[in-house]
Image (tube, rainbow, N blue to C red; front, side):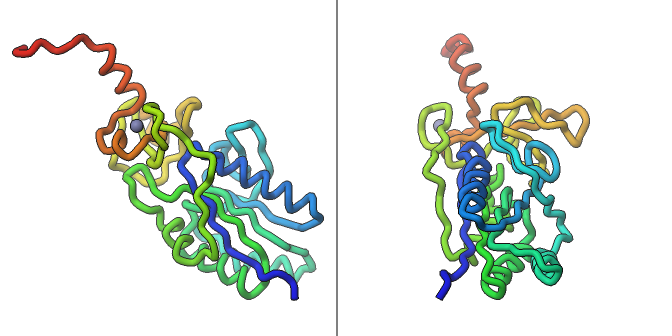
Length: 224
Ligand SMILES: [Zn+2]
């Protein structure tokens, strides 16, 4: 009996090294002679690429909202392709239907699916794709590489800043990156960036920049 295929969800905050692990996982399986496909959605490097903060990148297929994993896989297999596994990066951006399709690919076609993604958005709400993965995955693993808040505590939340100010409302999908230049804003004069924080500092909207500003400002006069 061959091992049973699995749907695995590896999750962490934005700084946790998910894309690096996605690329490493792909490398490990390819080195064993297995044949895989890479997918991503809204990667920091732009479309159709998995890129890690350490500088590695690989070509990938962009998962558009209408993309059908089941149809794609059946078509590829029908044309004689061999597929042993999928690497699915930025899986938080996939639709719930696409996650359902991935589960079907695992069960019916015995293809391993490794998903990598963020659990919650900048408002601290579960991404629909991530919620569906938690519901369906054979295993959900929180990445051991832990990102840290500026205070040194474990960073469990993703903060979005617009022109340097933390926001908790807005479009869920705006691509940007932690510690790199802010993303090309969809909305011309707004610079969107992300920062990982502990829950307390996310609640207080205390980003590293704001904490620095507060610590540098003179003591307020008692009755000013
Ligand atoms: Zn903190």
